[in-house]
Length: 255
Length: 168
View 1: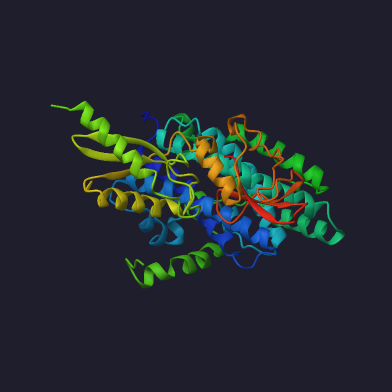
View 2: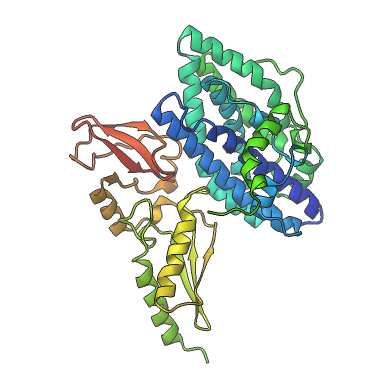
């Protein structure tokens, strides 16, 4: 590793990647058994599984980098909301199916660009995780963008609901694309991508699908931020309370 | 002194044992057919089997690791260990020819060849033959199926749904 990035910054960066995958994976798993159609139930469960698998690989590595013996389970189940580093976008509630699809679409457009760049990371472990993750995200992106088009260019009702979902979620997109000190340190060490270079690619992807969906791109107004440094919306606490309850009630339980 | 001939014989024996370890989700395929077993190494009489996951979250990997250990332990290779390697990332191109035939017989359409060209990843819909009646008059229902590695298709002639082992 180059001198530009310290172990602490790498640990923080791995938490961002891992927590984002974990929280979104958990959100999608909430649909299991409640999907609007069997195929969609299966699709979201599959996508959740990919994301949780990625989270495991990333949090295992984060534990190694941190070097005080925390396992993936310690990191996932024994940290409180303030210690989570996921993007605010992915902790937003599922809402109706169109809300979930819009959230996934905005994230997937970012994830395919991010993970493509991470396949070239100077960190061999991140590059190896990325080699698998990028193939999975391409499937996810096709799924969410396909549904954006079907629902956006669907009935008057589905169109109106998708436009409202976009407006609601748009303020959470800025955080993904705006680098802070940790992102800059990762870029300088060639571990992470240049977010400024990802932004136009994200805009192009999103713009093309929105046009086909007959939806209007919301204006870039004031953007929410804080997830990457541990300041979250109230929704994360509820999610963690459910996700962590069994592990905290029965520490070390196995079956 | 290192005995190369003995090590080679041991490696070959381990590969034969691995051919008996089946995927828990698709029990007609062995870990060798699937290309999950990447390497067998022998150091000082100790066996190491290197495996790679198909998908990041494939829940079968833990079971596969235990099944390999059990198969080797049962043959007296009690020091054997299984290690996981992520790179290079698994691809459906590693599925053996025997594996592809077994999949088709099992009722799962095998993946198109040459996923390296990324056509499948970019969304080109493959035209598949129905594994039941052979008709190529089929349609995709969903890119996600009963396990991470499969997609859902339907035959428009015999009207049966079927799984496709999708390209990655």
